[in-house]
Image (cartoon, rainbow, N blue to C red; front, side, top):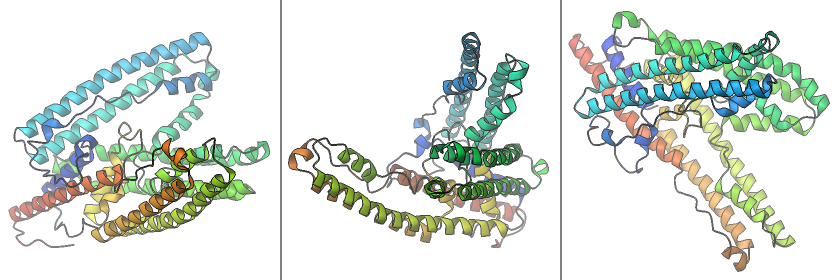
Amino acid sequence: MFLQGIPMAGRPARALTGIIAVLLAVLVWPLSARAQDDDEEVDLFNLSERIGSVAIPVEAPLIKAAEVRDIIKAFSLDEDHGDLVRSLHEGYVTVFTAAATERRDRMKALMQQMQEGGDFVTFGLEMQEVEKNWMKQRAGIGNDFFENVKATLTPDQLAKWPAFERDRRRRTQLHIGAFFAGEGVDVVRLVADLQLEGPQQAAVAPLLESYAVELDGLLRQRLRAAEEVRNIDYTDPGAMGNPFESFERILNVRRQIRDVNRKHAQVIASSIPGPASEQLTRAFREHSHPRIYAPTEADAFFKTLLAIEDLTPGQRGGVEGVAAAYRDRVAAVNHQIMQSMNEHEDSIEKSLKNQDMMVMAMVGAMSAYADEGQQAEQAPFDSKDLLMGEELVARQDDLYKQKRGVVVSAIEQAWAVLTPTQQARLTLPEVPELSDSQKALRQVRRIMRQSMQYAEESVLEAQQEMGETRPRRP
């Protein structure tokens, strides 16, 4: 991993403060600032030209109108009661938007200070403080909304609230910051997607309930552990204590969530006879690696072709044959990519077990500052992708080139099945050399390399001040 080799002799508090500040600044840096040409070099510490152009949007409210509809349905609210809850939600949106605007303005002010020659470590620490306070404020605004809703419910309705809250926590929190493969998979959702018949559904109901209860306990632990990390005061070495203990706690609970998901998915799959069992196993694997198994341009193209009204039986068979061969070939490449990612995760685990402080600090910070607002939609890449060494990066690049070749070849073969008249009505899909996620990942990797260089300089400076003129490598 490219983090190896950073000197941590004595792990002086000032050096650790600088490292964490750099990491946090990168982690909360708006993705819009990273969406640059892939070949463009970024000087992270000369921000005067870039920082003024970064657009920071006002974050949208986290509790959507769809959740209001869920409340109305879950508690069988009548029309007047539903209108009352809707009005409470409108008030929530107003308060949230005002607070989000204040947060945006504070971030812009920090960037302006940095543009005018501010210190990067100070910038990172102040950004961390803004984000920590915002996450607390945002959660409090949401909690106030739900407490106001609960105040309108009858005792019988309130008795159902814990189960509703548990399910909502799983739906809205499980995927956030998922680090380990399988950690962010919602087994309840996967089973619902199977659309089981009555007897099978009845058979798995107690298994799902057991899963939901066990998972919720871990989710609440993860939320507490993340808050503990965010509350570390990196500006006060005396109050900071040993942050690595806090990092380790949040990583341990993430492992437990992954293991609970795997265990219950296997138990439920084994209890379902027939094709549904295989479907659940496959779905769990694919949801554990969503970027690897995401639909490609070829998948969409096959659907388009098979919907053509004047497609002859022979042409349909030709397209279906190309699609079948494509699925086999792309599955083989996907399996290789998945294996390489599993090996990468194993290497990270070894580093964590060996108390690699840089890896633990980075992974712990990522885990604690996973942002519900920014991750409401799928992030463009996994955070563990940032920990890849050059050898694995090259291997991954090669595998994705192979995958692109499979996709392009399948599209061309399917296109050849069509007549010129049919082709004239369609557009041949373009498959980019690099996906948007790959471009974003390359850009952030550059930023992280520069961050590590800066961190090393901070450590060396601290060591020199402490009389350690010769850095010691771990």
